Image (cartoon, rainbow, N blue to C red; front, top):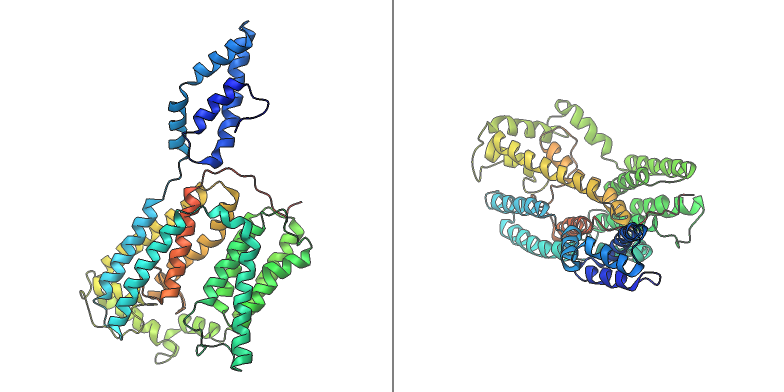
Amino acid sequence: MKQTNTHPLIADYLDQVCRHVRATEMHRRIRDEMESHLLDLMDEQMDDGVEEEEAVRQAILQMGDSAAVGKQLHRIYKPKVEWRLLAYVLGFLVVGLFTMYGTPVNYFTEKVDRYWLSSLMGVGLMLTIAFTDYRKLLQYSFHLYVLPVGMLLFLIWYEYYVHGNLISDTSHFRNIPFGPISMYLFLISIAGMLLTRTWRFRSTASKLMVFVLLPAILLLMTQSYLHLKLYIFGFLVLLMYTKTVRKEKLLLFIASVGAFIGAWLLDNYTFERILDWMQPTKDPQGGGYMYLLTMETIRSAGFWGHGFGAPSQMPRIDTAFKFAYLIQSYGWFGGLLISLVVALFMMRLARVIKEVDEPYGKHLIVSIVPIFSLHFFWPLLMSVGMLPTISDLVIPFLSYSLIGFALINFAILGLILSVHRHRNSIGKPHTFLAK
């Protein structure tokens, strides 16, 4: 597309350069920068007494062949997949599937089949999202907000008014991960709404209701205490990154902390888990049993462990305590090796945040990467008794989980990969919270 005030020869040269650059979103930046440089070269020629037409030709010659320049720029701006993250995921899946065959668990055949199915479906979903332009989601940010609101309202209506029961572990939809789906959709939608100038909510009260109170109320009513805490954590990280009016930022922060404390207090088992973790010997046959058993299991594993398929007295060794069982089977050496790989994976995720410049992508990964990393960090330390037990947190890809939960992890990683592919895309950050 030629600019109206651009010399025809320059415009034609820029068109030829841009034909070789597939990242069309970079064409405007390339044209502006190259035209500015060409005009500078042209002015130098004209200062030496060269006619305008000849000065343009000389400037173009100095810039170089349009095809060569275009191909070089294409290599610079070509979307690149973060293959190292994919390699880590495949490594986790291989280890998880291999060790699953030696794990003495109930319903072994059914779980292995589900593990394979979720892995194959998940890799396909992850790659599909990774090679899709995530920026297309920006225009649907408010729709993505309405979707979890509708899902949670339906769940509340169905359980309360159709069956007359509180939502609990006996819920008819207990196998559908409404909590994590809603949590991530809220964060993804709000990350986009913060950049949408046309978003109509302007008052502080509206921002408090949309960003904090409504998600908190719905997640509390569906008893998704853990995912409310995780949502608040992700939103606070996003809020700290976003440039906002200080007074509004403080109010949003206070409301978010209040919602977090509310979820903490309403979760009946929170304080019990913390007390059992701090003093496991006080109730060795009750709440402290798992912590004592975990410590004894790890202590007895030794440097090399008890080998593939070692029998275990620990429950949930395929899910929440998978890491502890891996140490039991492959020893402290195996545990240290897995910990090192997980640490490298998390460091790579942190580097992705640093490398992304595009505003919408930055908002997305700033809010979801910390939560995604927590799913690795917490179960790892929980399995060795260094953090309280949260049975709903399992190490993604490495541990067995229901298909819906597994697909969410693959989808989130696919979104992170998509953001990283377009990390050099240029945009100007705006937030309606800023003055």
